[in-house]
Amino acid sequence: MIALVVLAAGLSRRMGDDNKLLAQVGGIPLFHHALGAAITSDIGPVYLVHGDTPLPCPASVKSVRAGDAHMGQAHSLRAGIQAAQADGAAAAFVLLGDMPLICADTITALARKAQSKPSAIWRPSYQGKPGHPVYWPQPYFKDLLALGGDDGAKPVLLQSKDNIAILEWSDDSVVFDVDTPQALKEAQRRLCP
Image (cartoon, rainbow, N blue to C red):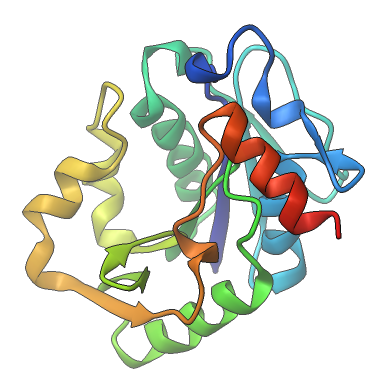
């Protein structure tokens, strides 16, 4: 079983007081774009990691509370991986809730590539810039569960750089995230023609 873990517990510090993940883009909350891609990929169970306040999601999605999400992204990541591991996942895709241009095709293409080398960490890249989602085989769960702080999985990626496989992607959907009000406007422009 391959789990899809959508991280949506961030504090949106650079966006002011409002939770950017709840900003309406194309008539739905920002995080629902990444969540929809995970669901539509139809690869495995989907886990939505949130902070203390649950986020609206379909009943088919497993809601995971990261009570220590305020301590950094690694804490949200740990909560999602822990839930997937408890359900017996053999691997997990990690998607970021502030990346609204990710689509199911990206996830499906990475899943196909992962079959050719299932022990590797797989991630897409656009013009040399590594992107998301990231495919993690189960042997890496232990390392992910030991993380802390706001660097996310960067320490594990750095120590495992010889085992990272790259799928070159044709557009910037795999690297575009919404971290500023300007990026939110750009997402609205691109998703609301």
